[in-house]
Each structure stands twice: as C-alpha cells, then as structure tokens.
Image 1 (tube, rainbow, N blue to C red):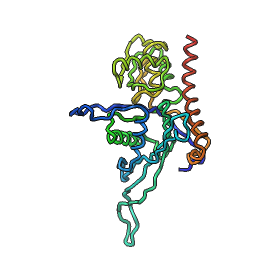
Image 2: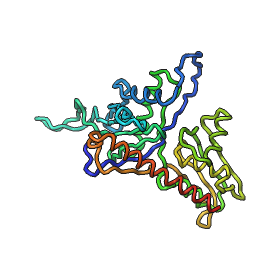
Image 3: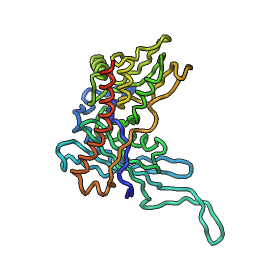
Length: 318
C-alpha cells in the first residue's frame, strides 16, 4: 500500500516461546532442535505459505489473514541480518443487502480476489526487534497480532519445531520505568517475564543469569512489601522492570503503591508501542534497500539507545 507520508512503524520485541508438551509427550527426537536465527528464518519463510492462512469471522464479515512476501535482505545488505514479510487482511465473505429488480434482498457477497489491507514487518534479527508498519485500519485492536501468532504457531508445527515466535510491544517513552519510579513507595508488583535474547544490559543480566541457571523460560514474579520494595537500580525489582521495558515480557505489569498521595493500582506496559519513522514509503524502500536498511536499523538503535543512556545517567547520579 502506498504511504504518502513515509514509513511509520511500531517497534516490537521478537520473543522465542517453547510449546508446553501435550498430554501425550512426544517421543525423543520427534521435534527438530532449534539452532538459532537460521531456523527462525525458516519459520518466517514457511509462515508465508498460503495453506497457513487464518480465517476469522466478525459480525457479518469473514476475514482472511495471510502472510506473504518473505524476503531475506541480508543478501542485499550483509552487515545486518534483516528479514521481511507482509501480513494482509482481506474480507472474503460479507453478509449484506443487494438491490434486485423486485426489491432488496439479504445475500452473501464474495469477492475474488478480495481487497487486501497489508502491513509490512521488518525483522531486525541481530537484536530480535521488529518494525511493524502502522495501519490504523487493522491495528486498532490486537486481532492482527493474534492472527500472526497463530500463523507462526502453524509454521513451527509444520517444521516440527517445539518453539514458536511471539511479538511483544516495547512500551513507548519508557512507560514502564516511569510508572515504576512514580510510586513512593511501591508496595506490590507483578510481572510475567520471558527469557531475554539477545539484548542485555548489566542490570537485566542478573535476572537472565538466574533464569538460565534455573532452566526458566517464563518467570512470573510477584513482589510485595507493605513498607515498600527496594526501588534502587541495583535491586531485583528494578531489574525486572527494566527487562519488561525491553519487551521481554508477556502482557501487562501490575503495580500498587503510594502515588499522588494515595494508594493506587495501575497496569503498565500495554499501551502504544514505541514509534519510528522513515521519510519514504515501502515501495521506495525496496528501490534503495542498502540505504533503507541502514536508516531503519539506525532509527531503531537510536530509540533503544535512548533508554540505555538514560539508565547509565541515572546510575551515575546514585
């Protein structure tokens, strides 16, 4: 789709998630062992197969969600590992009224091929970050993300991997960190963390090492103290919040404490994802791939590095 005002995107973290075994455990050797980004690319490529399309009915319309147009930009730009796919929603069936010679009748309308609304996704595999082109037409809810996850699940199963891919929005403007610091004191916090890979800071590496040592993929933490949790940056609560801010989480965080001179409970981390912008649209992007990839990754790195530099500055003032 032609964008008049450039390529606006939202930034998501690409998390790896292992399936829990079914009631009948798979025999040893049934699954292929996941071996890093080369297998991640296999899952992304297979997700664009038409047999993995997902149908979803809403009110009087049946939508089809499809992934297509896998492209490995590493062949054009070898310095960084970038892969792209396109996710599209199309209305394949719609109930409505039509005018006939004798009156107005209820009917089911089919269009072939149906009109598609696409969004383009760029996977920055060096950092497991994803730039998702913004479309107000299909991103006003999380339906697109749920359908994409179903497609990834199907692709992983077809390739006999015991893991799949999940996208988690990176909260814009350091929302989670700011919410954490807005309490004095913070008395309760609950967060569901994912095993981080590959972006780690000295602060978040503490929890990463703990998860690796314990063989932990999902870490649900609930910390409570009526007198207040330790909110120092070297303490565990801050490390958990920093990991969630980096997108290594599932869902929202819950925080309770004193804020605005009263006890408040808030949800954090489920708002709008961090934003990025390029001055040219997707079609122009394809014509200048090396330059476009450089600008895209620089834009993402700049957004993330702001958080890192602010963390460093805060540590220096302790």
